[in-house]
View (cartoon, rainbow, N blue to C red):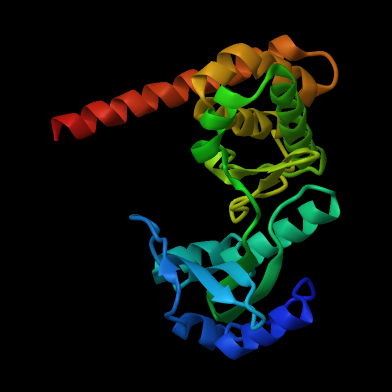
Length: 270
């Protein structure tokens, strides 16, 4: 792999000019703004703000995954999970979800290298999606939207999450920080990002879907949850069984809040 079919001819030329069409070039690239957080191990994320040669701004994201410690790599090899690195897994999730009609980022370039223990290093370049994360923008939207606009948003969010799960996939990090909102004249457009942990569970699908929904409820503004969560859930389910889902999601959210309080107490006492 290198430049991917979703990249335009102009994007392919820019990727090649920056050296992002090869794994060695991607790991040598040093022009972006590093976004990496603590405890990400060998994972590094960069924001690239560029020009496309005609003066138009371009924003991409580069994700690099360096080699983990050999015991971790050996464990993944023995369990059959070493054949695809995290970049390849995110690429596969993007392809599958876009094919199913779930809007997310475009993948522009990717690559990986392997040795006897499986994938050693990998990378992926993604196009930035329009808009901003719900975590940052939605409280302001909620304050200025009228009831009809909020209902359009609720329907769009229900459609997005239902489409993800109907395709057989779960996000595993379905927080408000990973749903982007683009306000357009035709209404809100939503997209999912950060799909590296996505997978298609064979078993216990209800459990995994409940986890996604609990993460979403937990991370959305309390005012929206109090007034509109039921409306969203009815739209998501598009049928009956709401009580069962509410109970399961409620238990998971309560568990998340309990863990958060324990962590706060522990950090406060250290």
